[in-house]
Length: 460
Ligand SMILES: [Ca+2]
Ligand SMILES: [Ca+2]
Image 1 (spheres, rainbow, N blue to C red):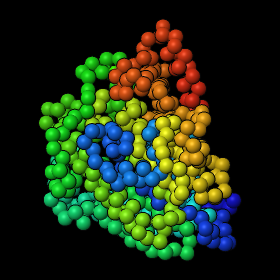
Image 2 (image 1 turned 180 degrees about the vertical axis):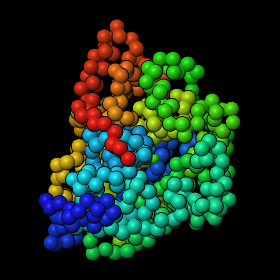
Image 3 (image 1 turned 45 degrees about the vertical axis):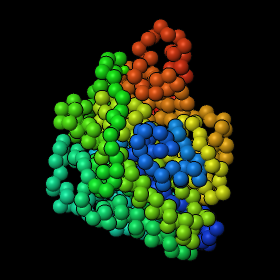
Image 4 (image 1 turned 90 degrees about the vertical axis):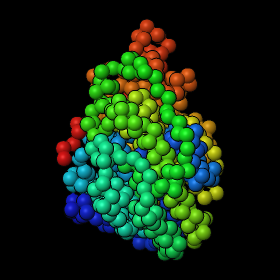
């Protein structure tokens, strides 16, 4: 394979200059990649909250394969998306945090081809709108950038933000729904899906909600009543290691659970999050309708994922940035034309999206990818599966998830173990009891999945 001519091209441009096949592969399937920002398992088909309403995500799941035990590799936007889009673990690249844009690392970009550029190099036309990469633009065709992607609303609205560090604001909005960024993103993507193409398409659609501030339209907010809060136990943190406390609360931009309660914001936030999820689901519905009614209906693979989960009070904390289930678990749906429908509870990783797509589309293997293709599970959801899902937060802190257990090991050697069969809320840390030989055996088995490489954090 030829290399990019200069690192600069890799940083700012989208159009790869190597490996472009001479003949266009007209028969390759299209790919529609739908990313949702900060969506936890509060979707109907995963049952994370009894009041959630996501009919469009649910119908996509019904028509494809739902991965009920899928996990992110980085536990916040930037490392999760870098890992997914470049196909490598945070522990192999050193991208652990939100503050280190990949565009400042030309040598990495020169040596690694991201997902859209790999597809472009194999004859695809690549298009994108909304938030796919955390920073940078790597698609050939980019849809409208509508105001600040950060808040999903225009500057006028942002200036009115109040609350913790300004972005932690919640509540219904009375603005014209067609002005919301996610509406504009969906409109543009739907338009593309209505057009014929002389090349196969990789079309990415990135929704910003339900990221903070939780600002759904009032119409949707008002449709939710009598909000139920997540279950919490008061002494939950008594059995976790100091390192877990430190890491979990290391981001000063996250409000504490005490602050949320004192300010009477817990219920408001859950209400506004549920409504934001519903709003995003409506936009997903518009995109799926356009696909179903357009020329690509029968030849398009659809992948829907969220970049990481989200705490709304569970384990007495908020946001992402943890190694617990609430942060690492994500919705993941893969719908293949004429493919098998079903669900699988095997542990899988977002890291698998890249190798799965090049496998399904029949593109050549990219030997630099660290994830495995999900094709065996798409053919048989009960297929033998020896892999675990690994999530990472900072150098040498990892969570390992298999079908039943979550094992967490921090850089200082301290540990947590949770049994999801009996403790879905992860309230009881079983790693504390060193004399429990059965649990210690589980720990020893799960330890074998810990990444061998733990490179330092890259500088900004
Ligand atoms: Ca995110
Ligand atoms: Ca506990």
